[in-house]
Amino acid sequence: MSVSYYTNDYIFKPSVRKHKKYDVFTLLGEYITSFGAIKENGVPYEQYRDNIGHYADFNHYDKDRRNRYFKRHGNQFQFESAGYFSALYLWN
Image (cartoon, rainbow, N blue to C red; front, side, top):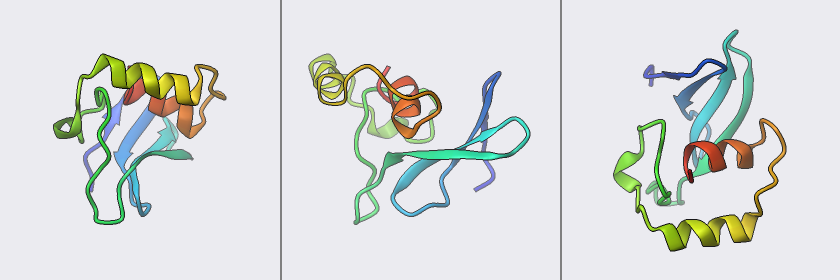
């Protein structure tokens, strides 16, 4: 899959890793991490809002569900971790 999403700091591509939605790279192309989950049957888990857009069909826009996500995972995420990117790009 060659479709990429660029920000000022990162490049996002649909993941080549099994059961992940996205791979994140630096602007120099260095791999950082993968984030977002896909079920064993190949169907992605829903998220509040996919700000990258490749999996936007699985947005649920349920604010209560988003609040429960942050309650479960907390709001302190290590910089550039999978949780960090999920919180910013799938659950915000």
